[in-house]
Amino acid sequence: MLKQESIKGIIFDYGGTLDTNGVHWSEVLWEKYQQEQIAVTKDQFRESYVYAERELAKNPYIKPEHTFMDVLRIKTDIETRYLVDNGMWTVNELTRRASYEHVTLRCYQHVMDVLQASRKVLHTLAEHYPMVLVSNFYGNIHTVLQDFQLTYFKDVIESSVVGVRKPDPQIFMMGVEALGLKPEETVVIGDSFSKDILPTRQIGCQTIWLKGQGWGSEEVDESLPSLILTDISKLPEYVLK
Image (cartoon, rainbow, N blue to C red; front, side, top):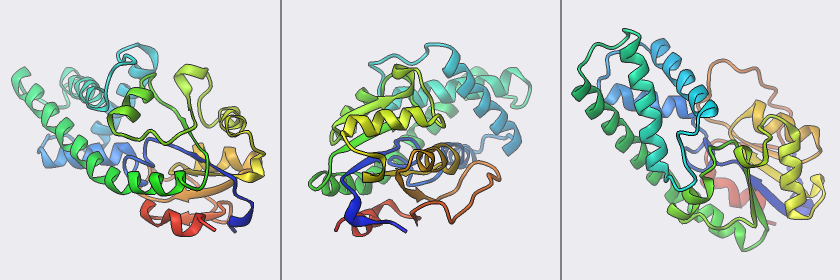
């Protein structure tokens, strides 16, 4: 159960939480692929998605100055090229480029729509609590936050910068320390049960699981989060005293 009276600070996840309201990014992209009638199966798409994520982790495609539009364009370029190169999608280069550009624009608009609610939540909570962002990201999260006018955080802990990735609890302890609080005085809000909720429970934080459409059939124990929400816009009414 969430103990409002003990909350003195908040840690937010970014991707899948603030930008998609709990929906895993693979599901957002897959929906846009279908809208663009890209003729691949979901398993083929997921293979390309995993490949792209690994490529982005290994190679410096994304630069600190890249906006989120840039990130989307780079990701969908890698994904669609993989699908074509491996014979899963038979189209010419002009069609491939047009398709991934359209997917990029659809995804970007989706994020802009979600952020209308997320920005209001952050604005409201920032008037009452110090907040820190803890994110597995590509080294450009500060550019993304500036671009989206999400400058409400006391500090930002980004995996590619600090050299620690979720679900390692250490990255969340960095967030707690940046707040200058104890874990039990901190509530963590994230969409991933395994990467956000479990590690922060281990270090003693309160947790709010933004439960949406996840990736695969992850095993979860719904008794572990302090609170489960399905809509980020409802957050203030549960967190504010």
